[in-house]
Image (tube, rainbow, N blue to C red; front, top):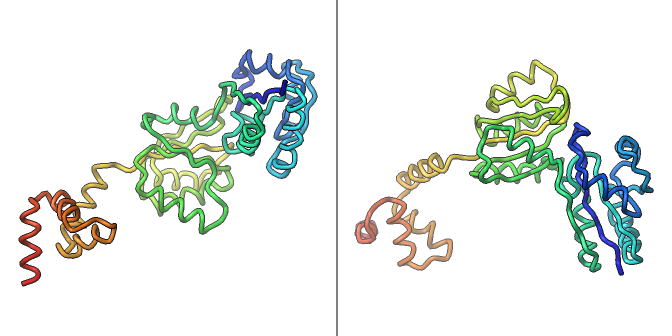
Length: 282
């Protein structure tokens, strides 16, 4: 019988957040694949876990994944851990999971610490719907594309950032999104944990004077539906009726559907749209 892959969440700062189940599984499996064995050995020693370790990280993720899958196909059980938090969230664990499924290997995930969810619940912002962007891309073009997409995001946005890039990222966010409410969470679960509820503008002013320390999670308020609707209404009112029609016709609507959409946008009847179009032709 093939073995199984266990995704084991590890503490993001406070060792007391390690679950009993995670400790047991790490003791029972045949091998632990760790993002950084030098970092993980401290955790394993603390909980007296003697299971052998091997490295699995961004730079060996495909080659090593095939090795690990081969081991599981021979019947070995393997646990995957990251430096902190849940494997597969903003790390190469997702590749190993995908390849394991393709190879017919059973995968299970042990719930535990996760910085993005911890920060979201701590933020004081809406938790009903949210999107997780992890670290913004280093590539300028790709980053700009994502920031452009986030301009109209109505869900709460969660972004990871390193302290030395925080000011630059806050500037980019303020330029793209305007002055939104945010909460910056630092040193989560640790002794000096902070949740700084502020705005993008005020945070930028603060961290321009104060050096940020510790890994940061930025939780950003989503765009208001009401604001977006008001802006759309304003743009439609400034738009010529023929241009408004062309907007929908260009999206593939037929004449009848486009007239209905224009009437809905402007809060008028379909006959009124038809009459206005006739006037334009005359």
